[in-house]
Length: 88
Image (cartoon, rainbow, N blue to C red; front, side):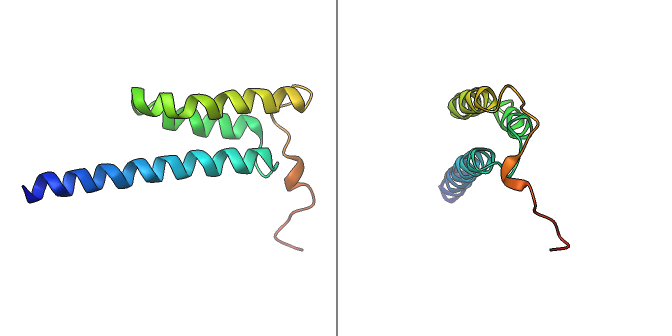
């Protein structure tokens, strides 16, 4: 009984962590801190772990494609990171 309870807790926390990562990756890309290409790769890695994860990342991946189009199809740019450096 206790083991099943622990397994459920681990699953619940893993799902919460996955959702938080998906949100964080999307937010960083929309703010231009990471490129749409980088975000898409990270989201694909998460999505490949299971069918359920793939479904959870699908809307974020669609957002990355739209973001790339808004940035003149240049998925490699990260406009929010311009001027940021560890020397400032």
